[in-house]
Image: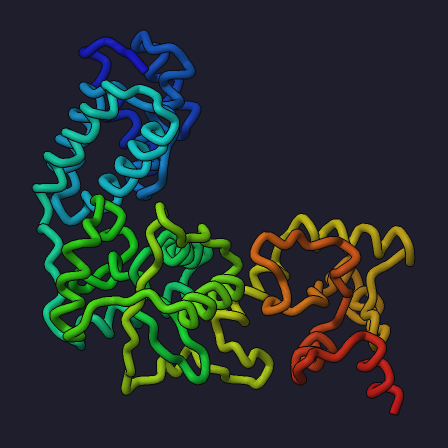
Length: 373
């Protein structure tokens, strides 16, 4: 994306005003167009500024002069503590284009900019003791069970792409955290994603703490693959003469990560499975399609077990309200399983909770029989 050097400061300042809410997007675009920039480029500059500030990947690339100016002024305006997310966004942008084998020269320049400003913030420090390792394991656990959908997705990708893992137990389940995340002190997703982590360095740190090296183990490998199914991810199959096999440390922990254990009896796999299931049930497209099909067939939405009709009880407030329940447990789904609308049942809140009270989950017919008794 090429613009004259004189326009770069104006593009930065106006993009900043839009991001901070002092201008609307339309006002910002119009101001840049009035300065001589074409409308498409104006929109891209404003959006790229926003993605930088949010730490999100962007696909429209700025020229190197613009990116250098943006980072120099981000540092001046927001300080080193706020550079983490822009650096994360930039490295994601770089990897996106390098993966497509496009803009090679520009990406070399972008990497130089990334390296320059990465040095402005504190360098990551390798962990030195078991407490720091355990803290990072707990961070991963919390991303998976209590984090936002974006945090959970990013943490799952780390587990999907990992090669060396610390395997640890929560209840009866063996879980896995990648060494490249665990190896740096007080690590966080945004902090982790600002740089290309060298797994050899983190492995050395974990070797020193656990006094052992990670080993390949077919039994643990099978448990890793089962764990990935529960997370809804499908890791690359490895092994053979030319592939790198996954390796594992086994760690016995004193703490049990209570937040992530079974808490209600509804999900024996623990909170990770519960959260995965709830995310699938919130898949708006398939649930909405299931509701639409059900209403087309029956004329209205009501609980398939007890017949409760929210609109009859609550009037207009309850119109078209019902909960969608996935009738297949997460543990029974392959990682790439596509939910079908006819696998979503219409349930009121009470029946929905009761369906989950027993494993295997009660079918609609079984629950109806219980209610009749």
